[in-house]
Image 1 (cartoon, rainbow, N blue to C red):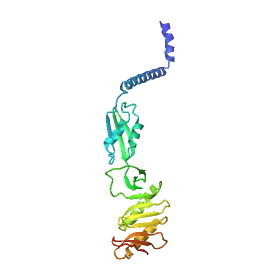
Image 2: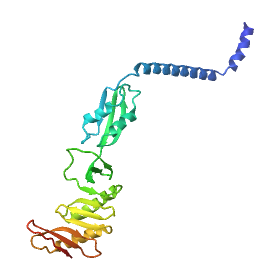
Image 3: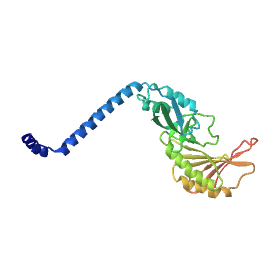
Image 4: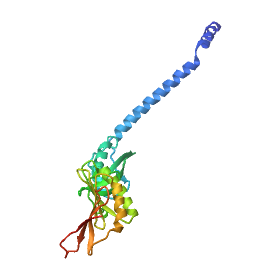
Length: 259
């Protein structure tokens, strides 16, 4: 017996117990992960048919009715929380006329949140389209549209330039108590403005701001014929301007003078 113990004692000293415990711990963790994976697989299999039961529309859309957004969402397959195609939901809502951007989020266990940001209309474009605050064009209609939206006209692709020019010139005119309500850019890139008092300004293609300033400076000094109102002011001259007058209905003629 003593001889056997004498042989075992050196063997015990030669075993690397730290390594042995480390391997054992690794095997225990590995087995635990495998068991967890099998449990998760079984659980997902049992719950793969969990349906979306709650739809929440966020963002407080103003022009788009909430039931229209919900109807668009329901056109997609909501039968499985896990297999729900988020992009399909996104595209369905994005297709609504007033929707600018959409964010879709699934929320466990059976909810879907859709955050909607609408276009903010700032002007009517070419009579039948709308411009948003970034100068982007979109097509939509609503009885809730402001009646005071300015009307802008121009060639395709000139939307941003037209909107930025409108803002610049409107601010210049407003300082001097004029209200700009419409602007047009022709195919030849000539500018025209309409004020709320019925006056049309022809600016031509160059020096828009300088010509508007000339109108502001000269207009208070214009001598009006009796019974006449300013109709068109032509500012396409290097200096000065030309004025067309309109008379009351019982007058048949128009007079044109250059200042």
